[in-house]
Image (tube, rainbow, N blue to C red; front, top):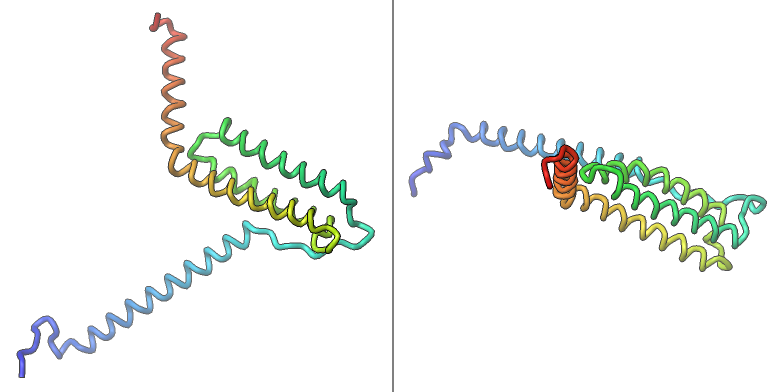
Length: 172
């Protein structure tokens, strides 16, 4: 018979079991809390698909194409504005605020355009592509703010300092 490992004294077996049980319980509760909060956050940022509008409220094909074009223009203008006018580290937060409202407008247009009907397959493709581009822009905004943001903000600060020095007559 081998010697008992002094680190695993049999007198403390129940204490070790209780400590392991406590650790597993706390870890499980924390993970569940995290999953629930992330799920609520994602649900709050992603509006649900609306049911199709009443036939009297359905827009014409041309009106739907124009509505999709307007959503695209709004999306592209906001992306350009954020990159140009917002501190780079805050782009992701500003984009998320815009994204939720924009997605709500997209869902309303989809509902009023009856994109699930067979006759409007092209419209369904347009709206799906529009949402796909928005998803890619969201990824871009997060990456830009997190990975490039600090360097862009530092570059802008360097430009500002150089302009101030130049305006003060320090540079020839």
